[in-house]
Length: 188
Image 1 (tube, rainbow, N blue to C red):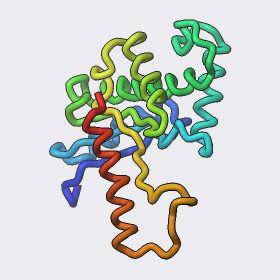
Image 2 (image 1 turned 90 degrees about the vertical axis):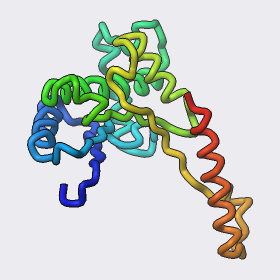
Image 3 (image 1 turned 135 degrees about the vertical axis):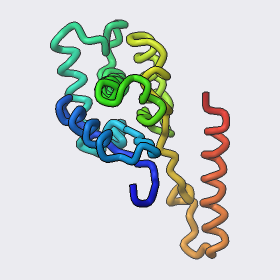
C-alpha cells in the first residue's frame, strides 16, 4: 500500500477453503482500492522436485479414486494429467472463493488469478485450460492470465566455457531471454 504496488500472492497447496476465504477478506479490507492482487495456486506445482507437486498429485489421485471426480470424467487414466488438471481446478475454486468475498465483478479486474505452468512442457497448461473449458466453461471467466516459468540460462553445462568474458555471458543470457520473448509473442 505504501509503495502503491500491486501484490502477487501464492496460495499454499494445502490451504483449505476457510484459509482462502479469510485471506480474501483480509486483502479486501486492507489492500488499497487502487491496487490489484494477483493470485497463483502455490508455486511451480508442476515441478516434481517440490513437495507441493507431490501433495497436489496425491490429492488428484485421491479425488479420482474417491469417485465422481471431473478430473477423469473424459476417461483419461493418466494420473499426471489429473494432477495438472487439479491445479486448474483448485485455482478455479480459489477464484470462486475470492468472488464470494470481493464480488464477481472483481474477478479479472482487481483480483487476477494466474494459472501457472511449465515452459518446457506446454501440455501442463493445455491440460489445465482444456479441463476448465470442458468442465466449467471459458477459462477467462476464472483466470486473468496464464504464466509459464521461462528460465533464462547459459545453455547446457557441456556448452559453457568457464573462461567466458562478461560480454559473452551477457550475450548468452540475452539470447535465452530473446528466445523466451519470441515464444510468448506467439503464445495463444
